[in-house]
Length: 565
Image (cartoon, rainbow, N blue to C red; front, side, top):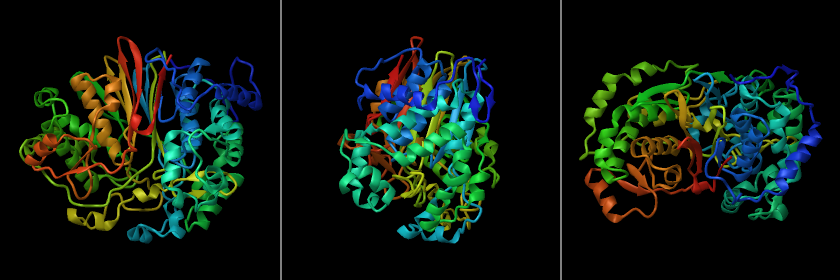
């Protein structure tokens, strides 16, 4: 069984003497000093493993497990560090989903800490998106990350809360080197990002984007993290930090209130589960649409059929893309926050329904989905696994690049623009619908593509994965899972393989740059309209078991980091 210590006043008790917070920060700084941005010397396999989108987050995860923590401690520490050193994608002003496989209990645990709409939400402006800069605060949802990570740690973690917050606090206070992804985003989006004073003060020293390797500090965020380490989530959801969040959102035209923050709670949910070719696959249910796409695709295609058409051939991509387009249509018609609309999962996944869909898919024709604006962005996915059989697949996000471009004036928190994931009414008109199940409404969670997934065989986890990149998340995760379970691709090969994407307008399928002309022509003969992926910032992180050891892999598209011990 997992060893879960008791808590008093938000702090863990245990047999080890407690170090002061300052001492913990000094220990974290000691690790930080010898850390290079790339962490070039990494073990390829081991009993513990982590894969994240930043080397410092990976290091934090492994350090937690080396210090006696478990995979849950590691994931929480990595998520918090990622929000400091790579805040383009995530941070404590956002939210996410986490799926855990508990090795001793042989069962999953799933927590939804997705952002929710304020109770004072005015839905009318959402029909006029994109909103003007002065109204960007309308897109800010109630942040769920701190309550979510705290609850995950309270329930399943092993170390003290202050221990897992300390690495992120150390990086915010004492500095971190700018990584390649952050440097690229600061440079390419300079004109937009410099408009926000909080971002400009930290990431544009002297008015210029911080260059690769430059050391940055974030003192306001450090002070906030110190309070969270000492006081728990009440430090963010009540008091001066909460007031700062509300004031900053209001100044940007939003409607967030103190009661919205005070009443926020994460939700435990039951994972989607499908048995496929000897594996038990667990993934995210609504309000995620990603898990639905993954499960439906598995139900449509037996392994033998995929093997017959061959790995990543045009025929293979066409078949899988057809299944994915059908899942996108289901998303638009049926999926919303299950706490606000009825989502009939059993009917959507019914074998008879999937059989009819399978019969409609052929190698020589393509079904189009109606054009509609379905856009997401951002996110950071990480996976951790410990020697006790516990695995964590966690996706955290502020949505688009630096979220809503709203920063807490005093707290330094970058706030999300997650409410942009609600669907406009005009986008469901092509489906003959008068309103969307994912329409903006007070207190609702917008539908997401995040797809944290764990695969189990004979009671033991053998693969955990998830991704970032908005609507590309579910297609990426589904492709890599199929490649592993059908063709036995190695972890390193999985994250490097060429992938395809399902656009929501224009072309029917997007390929990454460099696709052979013959391959494109083959897809076109099958009725596909082929385009080129216009971005490269979608990524998958994973851990797989090979020869009894855990092998992590990180996506090179966002310069991720994977290591094992």
